[in-house]
Each structure stands twice: as C-alpha cells, then as structure tokens.
Image (cartoon, rainbow, N blue to C red; front, side):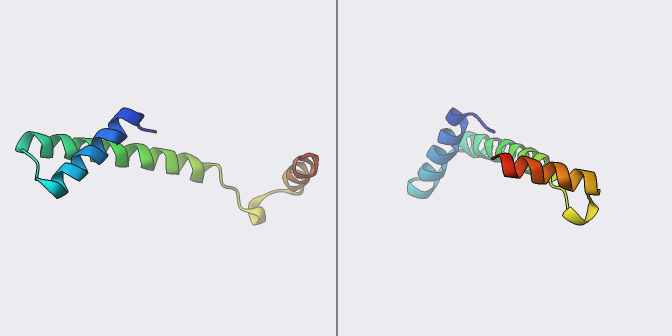
Length: 73
C-alpha cells in the first residue's frame, strides 16, 4: 500500500481543491499521487485475486487439505 504520508497528502490536496483551488504544480502533484495510489491498489487487488481458488477447480486432495485447515481453526 501507499505510505500514510502520501495518502494524507492526497487528502490534503483534495480538501484544498474544494476550498480554494490548486496551483498548476499542486494539480500535477495530485495527479501523480492519484496515479501511484491507483497503481498500488491494482497491484494489491491482483495479488488477492491470484490467491482465489474456485472449489470446482480443486482436486479431492486439495479440498481435503482446506477442510482440515478449516477444522483446526
């Protein structure tokens, strides 16, 4: 994920844009930060999707392993 400072800066720029507007430099910074945020979000989301397994696609052994882990917890 994006560092806390960068997220705070995104929010700060958004508030300023609503209240008084941004300079051209701030607009470029905001655009760059938003692109970086979206890129990190997509990477994180893809990694979650890559770990998703459909039950229909699993073998009997894999299903048994998952069930045994679930029972232990």
